[in-house]
Every structure is written in structure tokens, then in C-alpha cells.
Image 1 (spheres, helix red, strand yellow):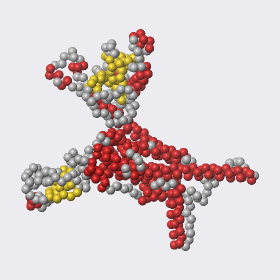
Image 2: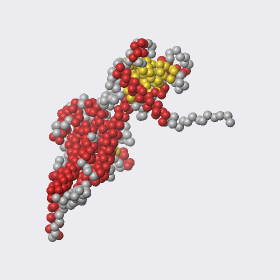
Image 3: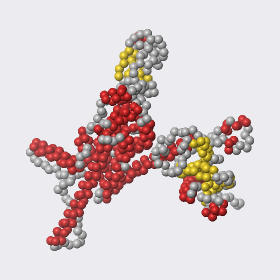
Image 4: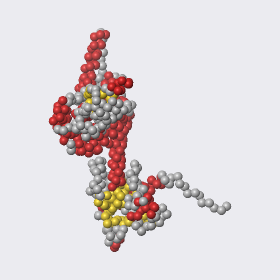
Length: 585
């Protein structure tokens, strides 16, 4: 039960260090059964109170713990932070097997395995009294890859012709062996790339920055920071990358020990038959989707003196190798682009058609993963842009749209607010284009801001409003919708002009140069809007800043209108059939 206020009258208490998460704090309250006052125990202690009332009744221990991040004590001076940092013991990552092969060249790896095999063979020979020879995959005494090559019907009888034939076969054989070696080296480069990335980036980011941040938070410093926001799923990424590297090297060694090493078989086991590669791809996706927000959050943290001192202390760690926190945060986003490049190199050096098809399938899976990630980023950027628009537009009430309309008094309050205020945000809605235009509805040009969605057009007028917090994604990820003005700049609000226009209810008319000159309409185009009964209800005339701007708008409008009409025909109207006309019989 919670502890309620009461008089302080008896018994002792004791504290012990609390080793739980950094957000745990000791509650300073009063025991409700006996009124015992529990003294403050600091941000890192768990208060254990021996209550005589409860002890007499149940002989139990009353423990009071409150997990409250907001009430944790903050550092009053940087001296305390420096003292805590000086006592931190650095976390180290080390795997004996990976450390042994990390940074090793393929030739050195082959030599080390041969040496180990020779030692094992010598020990077996001394114990059995015999001898055996282990063939190397590189220098096998078996038949040449071209030993069965037939010269065709051409008869080569002279010694010079035989020498020419042997030289030709030797050259082709050397080329194939060279390509095979290059393919193995490329596969080894892939393993080294993953291993080096694990050691020099992921584990540095985890052990040098994330873990010390959590440790100083246990001591009550930098409590404003949220490690899970800054580092995302870094723990998961470290685990799946480590598992991937361990499985990779185990497949390589097992194939080498079998005496018939095949690069394609190793890659198929790793990428197709195992789930480690799929888990790794998904972990990268989750990290990348959080990356932009992590950068924005880092800029917020750097406004705090404590975090700046902590970051400087971390950067002095020799494991950083002069890399800053931003460099380490972006490294997973850059690393995912490297795997398809190495697989492409392996594919180019593969002679066998079936093996090349297998590697091509692996390569396509990796490239599809990158395209899927790109689609996720685009969707996330578009969705947050929709949220930006919805937060910044104002929907006029019906009385503002038509001041002369008579509305009964009892309906004025219910009709004062539009029910479509949350119309904009939809998971499937896409922003195609947006920008400023001149509207000529009243004969006098007025500036409007037009947003073209994949299903409708929104015309708005700019209005001075309160400053709004910037978007976390659209401010940092280059927009593909427009390069001009945006609806989130300058703290403005945007009032919807009349009503949104459905793309299947408008006709677009291009004002030619001759018509424009005759009517003083330069760079103009017209919307003719119809209702569902094909009645023309309104006409909007727009002017762009220049001819290229007008052509861009017309191209985007016509393509989007055609696409939307095809979508409606394939979905909404697909099952609708016109009944056959009946006649008199």
C-alpha cells in the first residue's frame, strides 16, 4: 500500500544500493499503519522500512519504492559529474573467435587453417603410425576445371598445335582459378565488413556512449536524456549483428574443414536457409526509421551543459578513433548500403550459371530490402507532412463560408465547428505537390497556397498564427513534393478556401498564350468543378509565377487526376454493372 502522511515516532531504517533501471527513485513518504517517517535516501537507493505494526501482525518487511523519473535529483555542479565519470569502468566487448579473425586477410586465414589442419594431421599420424594429406581448396591435386574440355572436331597433331592447345587450356584454367579466388576474397571482405562494423561502430556506440549515459543517470546526472530515443534499437542491432558474424564464420570454417569449400553454398546457408540475415535487415529498418528523430533529439540534448560535458568525456575514449557521436549514429544507415555492393562483386566473378542465379537471388533480396526501407522512409515523411498540414489549417464554419445563410438559433452552436477537421491525415493519402499560386476568383489576384493530394486538392489562404514546433522529419529529410514555400514555415496558419475539390470532379483547362494575351492572363490555368450530377458549380482561375511553374502544375495535375480516376474504376466502380435495358415482348 502507498505510504500516507503521519507523525515521525520510531524505528530505524537502512538503505542499500539500487541496481535496477536508471529511472528508479526512492519514495520519501510516511508509513500509513504506524506513521513512520521515511528519510530521504537519494536517487540511487531503495528504502527498506521495518514497520513494527506490520511486523507484529504478519512479520513482513514494508518496502516503499516509487519509480518517478521527473523527481530525480539533478546535478548542481559539473564537479559531481566529473567525479562520477572518473570512477566509471569502461565496458569492453571481446569475442575470442571474432577477435582472432578480425582484420585478417584471406590468405592469412587460409594459412592459419592449413597450419591447424597440419598440426592435427601430425598428431594423428604420430598416434596411428601412418600419414595423411589434407588437400587445400586453393591448391587441390584433383582434376582441372577444364580437364574435360574437348577441342571439338579440330584435330591437333603437330607438336606446335599441342603446345598451343595446352597453353590455351592453362590460361583459361588460371583465369577461372583467379576468379574463384577473387570470389572467396569478396566473401571474406563481407565477413570482415560486418565484423569491423560490429567492433568499431556498434559496440563503440554502445559501450562508450549509451552504457555510460545510463550509469551516470543511476547517479542522478543527465536525467533529462532518454537513451531509447537517442540510440533507438541499438541493443537489438548489436545482438543480431553479433549473431550474424558468429554464424558467418562458423559456416566458413565448416565448409573449409569439409575439404570442398564453395562460396555460393556458404552464402545460401547464411542468407536463405538461416533467419539471422532476415532479423538483421529488420533491425536495420527499425534503426533507420528512428535515425532522423535521433538527430533532432541530439540537438536538443546538446543545449544542456551536463550532456555536453558527458559527450566530450566520451569522445576522448581511444576506441572512438576521432569519430564523433553523429558519425557513429549515422554509421548503421550507411552500412546497409555496403552488402549489395559486395554481393554484386561476387556475382560478377561467378562462372557457374546455377551458382550465379543463386547469388542473384540473394542480391535481389537485399536490394528489395533497401527499396522497402526507402518506401518506409517516404511513407513516414509523407505521414508526418500530413500531420503538419492538419495541425496548421483552419476550417471555416458554415456561417463564415456563407454569411447570408439563415441558420436556426438552436443549430448555430452545433454547426460552429466543421466535422472534417481531421480529414487530412490518412495512412493511404499521398502528397503529390504543393506551392503558392495566384487566385483570380474575384477578378483581383490574391495569393493562395494549394496542396495537391492523390485524391483531392486543397486551396488555402495564409493567416498569421502562433509559432509552431517544427517537424522532426520534414525539416531534415529533403521533400520531394515541393522546393518552394511550405505550409509549416513562419508560424502561419492556413484557412481553407471554400471546400476541398475531389479530383474526379474537376476539369483542367490550360489557358493558351493567345487566350492569355487577349484576356491579360499570363501563365494561367482553370479548374472547372462539377458536382456528382455533372452540374458546373464553380470555376477557379490560377496564375503561376512563370511558364515552367505552370507546366509543372499542369503535368502533376493531369497525371494525378488520371491516376485517381483509374483507381476509382478499379475499386469503387469495379463491381458496378449497368443492367441490360429491358424491352416489350
